[in-house]
Each structure stands twice: as structure tokens, then as C-alpha cells.
Image (cartoon, rainbow, N blue to C red; front, side):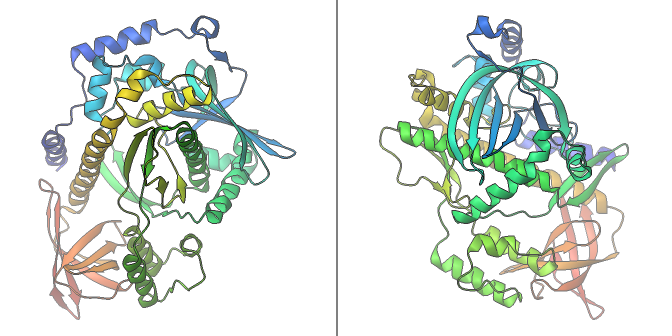
Amino acid sequence: MRAELAASLTALRESLDLVASFPPAVQEEAEKAARDVPLDPAGAGLADLRDIEFLTIDPAGSTDLDQALHLERTAGGGVLHYAIADVPAYVVPGGAVDTEARRRGQTMYAPDGRIPLHPPVLSEDVASLLPERDRRAFVWRFVLDEGARPVETTLTRAIVRSRRQWSYEEAQRAIDDGSAPPTLAAMPWFGEQRTARERDRGGASLNLPESRIVAESDGYRLERSEGVPLEDHNAQVSLMTGMAAAEIMLRGGVGILRTMPPADDEDVAEFRAQTVALGLPWRTGTAYGDYLRGLDRSPAARSVMEYAAGLFRGAGYVAFDGEQPEETVQAAIGAPYAHTTAPLRRLVDRWSLVICHALANGRDVPPWARESLTDLPALMSRSSQRASQVTAGALDRVEAAVLHGREGQEFAASVVSVRADGLRVQLQDPPIDAKVAGADAAAGSSVRVRLRRADVTAGTLDFVVVAGGEASGEAR
């Protein structure tokens, strides 16, 4: 079965033209940049910020570290330094690395390994903000008031040095047991205040439990994780930075935004009706974000969140130079927003960084960034589509492998949503979602389903809902 799954995952990569290795010209150019790009602050004309005790917080085992932070509480609020990997320093515009990165668009993640945006000599070594190594970075500095609102923002190109790489789990434990360094100890204050600011501007976050594929010696297993509070706090750092980047670009009249239109009235009315049917009514006068934040972890609440996801659609990129675009707001965030904090893993962030740095410091935007702005929306749309395909396809294949050999067994499940073509259910154990065609049950209700077939090669599951001893419907 392990060999069959490996073959199926390989076939998925091939069908999407995903190749982890890089052409020789790309590799050679990346290695030359790794050797030649200076790290001496004086020689490179960069600020020396190595005295700031940055740290990184990422999933365990990460090596492509885009961000490092330092947060200090003050009498009036705080000061946040947020270092973002200086990928533009290592990529020659129009060169081999740039051309290949534009083809790839973003790093793709699969159970059998990631397909990186840049050669590992850059993304996992010289450009990555690894601990105890001098690294180039764009450093955002935010002076914050007591509500974690930025009252002063600067952006500097510098040399930094992270002190330690933390995983989310170990950092959360340190916060909980009181052993965390000052930066981590201040993160709950920051996250809670930024969540309150999200509420003020009408934003909303959909924090659905994440299905994670965990590699083991004999294959893979699935787990459903709620994450730890620090993940939300850390996400607020990136959100605030993206909002600051959007503000700088809009004020400067050139840039690229991540946008999402607001939900239309019919979709909102349909969602409100669904919440009533599920017994968790979204009452008039309660802000949408406040309603979502108040939900528990019950099956009915999960169903509400799934239906809410239908309102968060239509996200895209809008490039502009001169006249501002008609649409500037990312509706889920409730403000203009730009992707700018993950340049090792996402193509568009390289443009956002150099544009923001130029505008924030009264300099001309580099011609290469300005001239190629209009190419980015299509490049990112294509890569995002492929990323969704590889994520969904890999999960389907691993789910089929996990259940292979259990044909005929029954599983307890909850109905996540009801669609025109049937049900979407979530098994309690293992944590697997499946679509059941031709079956009928209420969203949020409990059902039992029987597995009829698990096809690892195709990544499909065939379930039936068991009702009163009889089976009805099919799942794939």
C-alpha cells in the first residue's frame, strides 16, 4: 500500500507539472548569488540590526523561514520589529531564478515533500532567517499604542540575526508555563488587541480545524488540529504588516493588493437562514465577525463555519500604477491588504517588499518591479489553482490509503453541509471528510456511514449512509 500511495502521489505531481528540482542554469545562478551577495552591513549599505533579539515561530521542522520578530512592551503599548527575508537581494530581475520563480508562482506542499519556489540554497539556507546566522532582511518597525494600533511605521533594509527558532507548540508551552522570553510573553497581548481591532473594522476570521498529514516510518496518518492560540497571534502580525503595506502602496499610487469582494445580499440571507436551521441563529444586530468568533466546536458550529466559507470567495490580486483600482478591500479582513511577508514561498511578496521599501523611503520604485506588475495577477492565479489541486489531491490519496483495507466497516460521522447533490460528512475517527451523493440528512446531525471502496490510485472514497440498517447514497 505504501508503494501504491507513493506512485499515486508521484502521478499527481506529474499531472500538475510539478518538479522539485531546478534546471542547471537556475541552480548555478542561485549558487552564485549565495556566494556573492554581501552580508557585511557597511559593505552592503544596510542598517545593522543584529543587536535586536529576533526569533522565529514556525511549524516544527521548517527550514524556509520568511519572518522573524521582536516585540517589546512599553508604557504606552509596544514596539514590534518584523524582519522579512530579503529575497530580492538574491534574485536577478529577468534572470534564470526569476524566470523559474514566475513559472512556479509559490511553494507547493505535498506529503512526500515540497516543491519550492526557489532553489534550496536560497530558500532553506542563505535567504532563510535561520537562527544564529547573519541574514539580509526588510525590517518593519511598528510603534504601537495600547490597543496595538500602529502610530508610527518604518521599513528598513538591514542585516539581522535571529536568536532562536521556535515551533508553535514549544513556544505556546513556554508562554503557558511562564518561561517565555519577553517577545513571546507579549504575543497574547498583541494578538488579543489585534483581534479586537479586527472586530472594530468588521473583519472576520474563519478558523476551521485543519486536517494535517503526518509522515510516519510506515506511511502517513491524519490528524485534525485546532492549533494553539499563538498561531492566531502570530497571524495577526502578518495581517497588520500586510495592511500597512497596502496603505503605503495606495498612498504611493503603485502596487499590488490582495482583494476580496464583500458577500452579496442573497448569499448573506441564505447563510443567515442556514444558521437558524442549525439552531445557532446569527441574530440581527450582531456583527458577522463577532458571530463567528462566538461559535463553539460543536458539529452544528462546524457546519455554520463551512457555510460561512461560502461567503469568503472571489479573492484575487489587483495591480495598479497611477489610478487606484475600484476594488481595494479584502472583505474578510475588512481593510486593504497586500501579501508581503512570505517572499521565500510566494512570488508576489518580492514585488510588494521592494515597492513598499522604495515608497516608504522616498525612492523610485525599481523599474523591473513597476514594469512587470501587471503580469502578477495571472501568474498568482495560476499557481494558486495548482496549489489547491495538489493539496486536495494529496489529501484525497492519503485519506484513501488510511482507509484502504477497512471496506465494509461503519464509521460515526457528522453532517457538515447539505448540498443539492447530497451531503458532506466528517468522520469522527479517522478525521476524514467525504461527499455522499443521493443521501439526505440535516446539517449538524450525526449519521453512520459504511465504506464500500477506497481507491488510492484515484484518491476516491465510496461511502453509503446507513439508516435503520439500510444503506443509501454514495460518497466519493
